[in-house]
Amino acid sequence: MIRRRRLPLPAAALLLALPAAQSAPNNGHLLLEECRAAQALLAEEPLDAAAREGAMHCLGYLRGVTRIVTIGRHLKPQGQLFCPPRAGIRSRDAVEVLVGYLEDFPERLPAQRVTLVAAAFMRAWPCTPPQWPDGPPPVGLEDRWQPAP
Image 1 (cartoon, rainbow, N blue to C red):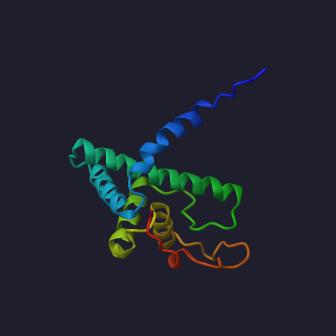
Image 2 (cartoon, rainbow, N blue to C red):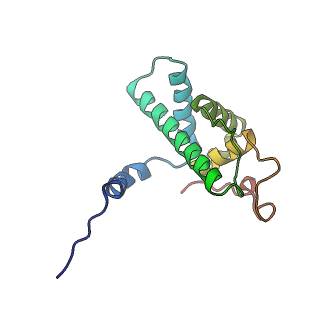
Image 3 (tube, one colour):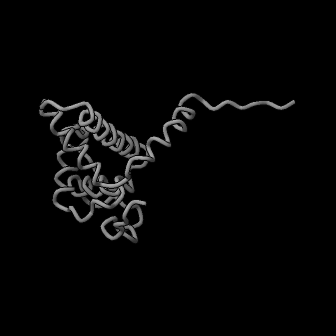
């Protein structure tokens, strides 16, 4: 007898969302645009529907990164890329840090989003002393600026 296996609903939803997510550029150009819109949204400036959607994408992306780091800090305190304050990172602060970083280093906009966010947060919230279990990493993020595919 052949048994069919069903995907759990969250996994199925993720698979359905992948083509849409992959169609957007995975680099800093769009991320900067979206996060500038997030700054406007947080300042309660009027935005059109497309800008509001981009702002929400930026806020959600940064929220996801900060949540993962918070969970990781509790599970494995050593090996953190950056060390946010114990109280956490407010959305407004995360957006300001990222936009400031992207504006300070426009030549890095072709890099992947996650690399840019990590580098911005490492600059804003460094670990002191560095939280690497076996000393510094062999290759730092600053040395690996690869344009997104």
